[in-house]
Image (cartoon, rainbow, N blue to C red):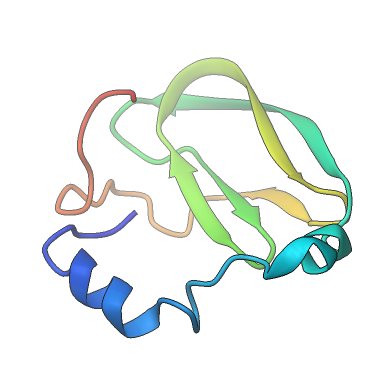
Length: 101
């Protein structure tokens, strides 16, 4: 998640270098098998980040939630997914848009 003001500039500077999908069928096959992972999470507030979900090689995201939820996450086999205490407790309101979808 990031600010949209400079999205075109970031895209222009990094497409084909940092922002690059697997190239060709052989490279895509090297990534392994696509698999579903079910993650159970819980939290105590809609206003404070409750948990981080970190995906190796991709990044992490924080969830604000009150109660329990079950999420499904799709990754390639062998990609490590970890749950951890949130690195940033307060929501970054300047980077977020409220709601789902």
